[in-house]
Amino acid sequence: MGTLNSTVSNDADASSAIDPIAEQAAEWIMLLTADDIAERTRARQDYEVWKLADPRHAAAAAGMEGFINKVQAVRAPMHGDTRPARAALNAAFAPERKRSRSKRLGVVLAITLALVLPASLLLHIWSPSYLMADLHTATGSWETRTLSDGTRITLNSASAVNLHYDEQRRAIELIQGEILVDVAKDAVRPFLVETRDGSIRALGTRFVVNQQNDATILTMLESKVSVQTATQRAAKLQDATQVHAGQRVRITSHSIDSAEDIDVRSVSDAWKFHQLVVNDRPLTEVLDALSRQRPGHIQYDPAQLGDIRVSAVLPMDDTDRALQLLRTNFPQLRIRLVTPFLVLVDTQPSQ
Image 1 (cartoon, rainbow, N blue to C red):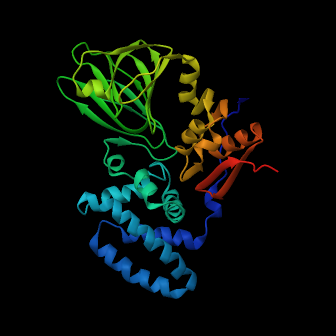
Image 2 (image 1 turned 135 degrees about the vertical axis):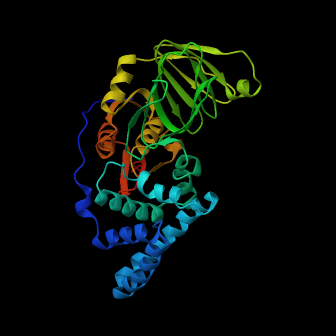
Image 3 (image 1 turned 60 degrees about the vertical axis):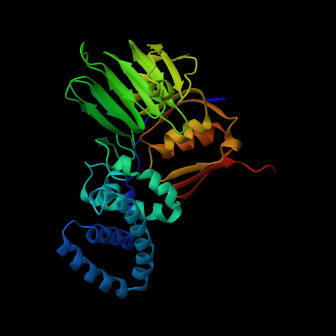
């Protein structure tokens, strides 16, 4: 087990290293998927001229058109509505507050990502449920919203929720990612967070819910909640497990693990300062958390890394720095940057 600490630092301006042809290709994608039919028609004519002007343009176009086909595969279930597919280009890779150049840069990243990742993974990143969610955040972006009842919800990177409010209940459906919820009290309407693994019921409290690949992780910061598994929910049972402030539990569709104690202040500070704070957690869990903070994918073999455990405070706003810290602290690790959007992590081969 290793222990490491760091402060958050800023990335250098990556846009200065972008290939001009790649950036032109990004601009063509934006024009060729415009909502205005006349604009798309004009763009298509000019695009054909651009392709013929330089062999490098034709090469870039080949990769770009393959990417557009993948985006159309995402768009197809939306019955021709281009907005979700276009939202994938901007929302999944560039926060809304970035300048227009950053949006084009986001599409450049998307082109590269499409060439190095399988289509199944792209569809997972840009799933229709994520694109059509009531609230969602881009990769690397955090957002706080105050809901109609006064509840405050903060969405971590690449997270998505649907809101279900009526006169009888207040419910948030967590589609993917992680949220911090500060629940406003309402004596009449209980507050629910629902995931595929179960339901969390509260009247007024503060907690974190993390939807992982195989489970939901609940971290309690204030007061208490009642938790049911998806199996209990489907059977409409009254049984529920109480989870109190300072506890964390792992919830699957059929079970709730024993609670473990957590440091409430450390968790609160982690959300405040955009840090990843882990104490004796599997390296694979740390890599998954970092992967959600960056465009692209961190790829590893769980069986090879399964025995490595980490205690750390890592910067979520600087995942390259976080990976460097892991490599320094664990010399047996090999971290290879195939592209800025595909990172391979394994152990050093034995001599």
